[in-house]
Every structure is written in structure tokens, then in C-alpha cells.
Length: 243
Image 1 (cartoon, one colour):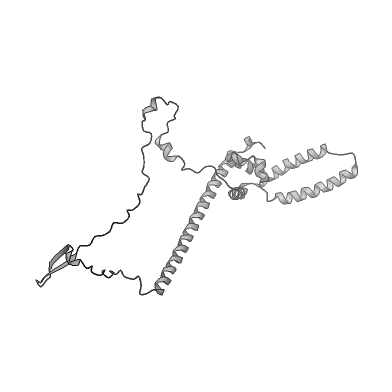
Image 2 (cartoon, rainbow, N blue to C red):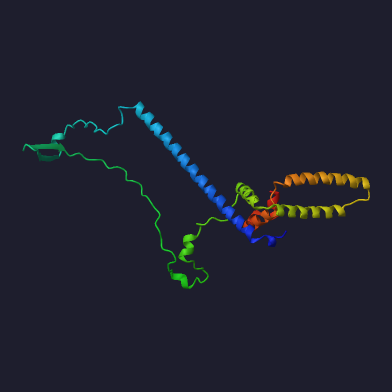
């Protein structure tokens, strides 16, 4: 069967089943991420609780460290004065020496991405005539859509999903075509010895019966042709069938 004999219905089935399997795979991946996130959150919560139970008196509330001992020249240092009046009218004055705070290392310079203008005019645009123009809608959608990627596991799932669409008539027709090809090859290879013919017929009958049993669960060739049309980089229909 040639590629031209693949109906549009089979092409539509391949595309729809492929999109469905990709969507199922994405949902499964999202569920795995949610489960992993919940598991990590539970582990971290248990670790925090165990740490707090081991150290109940440490790290609960912030505290002010004890002041450093007064230097010998404190009386000569500049002082800052604060005066306040409480509710009873008592005026209180507080004085503390002014201390120099040493400088600290600055925070490293951080960079971030910012949107830039697209399709802007340049000075040499009149000279470079071979640069193609792409609209903003093309640039916005560039790289967003997933290409025709299909791995081995997805290929097997796609074939199994498409097997549900094959009918008994299609399976019987393909088996008759294959048997006709095999019978024509056998006639070309016949010998004049009757004994060999009988033994060969018996062996062919056994192989045919075994093949019919095996092919009951084997997908038809049309499925591989439709997949090959949708994903030509995966190989020919015969290569897909052998895989």
C-alpha cells in the first residue's frame, strides 16, 4: 500500500491521538511535580518541627546584644542627646556617645532581563535587502509551539491507541494481500521434487497459522503509513513496523 492510499481519516486520527497523548503526558508530569512539591514541603516542615523541639529556648525571639565596654576616651567623644516628656510631664534626657560604624562590602551588582524593541529601523537597512521581515505575531509565536517530537514510548502508545480504530475488514484485507504476495513468491521458488513440496507446504501451513495468531494483535500497515506521513523524520512505514 502506498502513502497515497492513506485516507484523510487516518491522518486525522493520528494527529488527534498524538495531541491527546501529549496532553496526558503533560498532565501526568504536572501531577508528578505537585506530588514531589508536597513531599518536599512535608519533609521540610517535619525538619523544622524537630529542630524547634530540640532547641526550644534558642532562636525564638530576637534579642539585643549586650553593649560593648565603654572605652577610656568616652568622655571626649561626641555625644547625641535625646529629650522626651512622658505623660506625667517629667522631662527625661538621654545621652550616648556617637560611635563610628565601619563600612561593609557592597551588595554585588545584579542584572536582569528587560524587554527590547523588535523590528526597529537600523542605519544600514537600506543596504541589507536580503534580511527577511517577520511580523510581531511571528516573533511572539516563534518557539512556543511544540514540534513533531515523538519518542519511542510515545510511539508505542500512539500505535496502541490507533489499534482501537482498525476494523476486522481492514485486518482481513491486509492479511489476504500479504498471503497473496507470499503465495506468488512460493510459486516462483517451487522445485520438481514432490517430497520437498509436501514438507514445504506443511511448514508453510504451520508458519501461516502461527503468523495468524501473532497478527491478531499486531497493528495494520496503514497505521504505520499514517504515522510516517505525520512524522517523516521517524523513518519509512516499513522501518516503523519493524521497530
